Length: 594
Image (cartoon, rainbow, N blue to C red; front, side):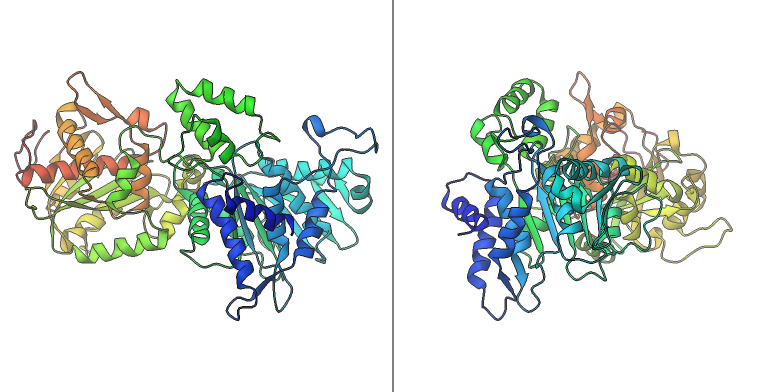
């Protein structure tokens, strides 16, 4: 039996403790073996090809750590010895082939494992095989990352392997000054590639490693690689990462896609996934959990080091969160300290971006003509602006209401790429999907906000289908500190503007009510991805009386919260106007000062 299948069997039998998604990857492999020969399944498993790939990897030398020295018996560097889980990955990638063509089955491999488990070494082996030992004339292989210097880490590992192994030096030439490894016999090259590399056009990629995918703020590099595969017969995209901080961006999307593939919720026969992790129910302070999440336990992962990390983190919640992410592969659900993201998600289960956009469009139509209250958070002219409409539902038997939120966001066009890199969230993709309205220049053009709300333009022309036309907006709450001239223009247009300051007196009650709505599942936020990101960032501060309000300074350390602030304002005004709980702030209508 080959080593890959042996590992899968041992995992399924319970001989190797692993997390659920790791287990399901093994189950998928074994079930696919049973499907061979089925007319509906066009792939077969060529164990000989898989074994050949494993043999190649095990000819590569160690270049770092205690094994990066010469074996006294042979006079050569110690060679890699693939652990069972690594053999499973290599055998899967190179052993599964198309029945008709013999070409590789898997085009994408998503590998998510904790730190110190040898991701970069495995990736370096992949790119060396692809550049010179894959029978691909003129192969163009890239180690990619957010910046070229990060991409050079994987490329540098491959270079060190070549320099340390005479058999590789005979076939490959290293040119440090151009950061190129060349295979003259096939005309192939291996280079690092970052988002900051000058030219991406015209690439003809045969294989690429995307390093630390969780650090990619957008899908830009994934798109560059994916769209450059067109003329290759059996390209491969090898994504390696540790779990990320916050469930947004391209890496989380690929994590979730992989989960659906191995859970058989989605069929993609060309996508391979391997995720090593702790399960939610596991005790993160137990050594059994550490072993389970780290497949290289006792090999490249030092038990003493992990024990020391968790001992130090036990009394420091912030550090413990980071340690669980880095060493147990547990995705952080958000950086803020107020909203429970599990409860937030129960209000509307997260979905992929396309589903979220479709849902938002549906609800924008469904709520036309309905009564609502708005919150407008103008922030600074160079920052995000959020407008959130809150639609109160009918009271239930207990006298409680649901609230549905419809948000709009505005951002200066010229700052979107910078924000994507800085905040590590896909502003550019949100803009393309219509979730962000990009205004010209490097500051928010308030005229665009006015046009959306009332339909009036700078020239005095009134455009159709403004929010005032589509919805029965009773009030628009705003903070006068950042209102500028926009509020005056909106008042002249007939908009029902209501001052809503950001102090304790104004924000305490609506903040409390907003939190209760999330906790009780009565806030229908439609799984809007920007609102979810902001909900995960928000930090509140509390006064001696137990009142709370958003803490903008602390929240800013994690990300933006403008949409949640606007949502709090809109829900607060709605509760007052609809005769909700008694509130310490004024219920006077008109241009009210809070």
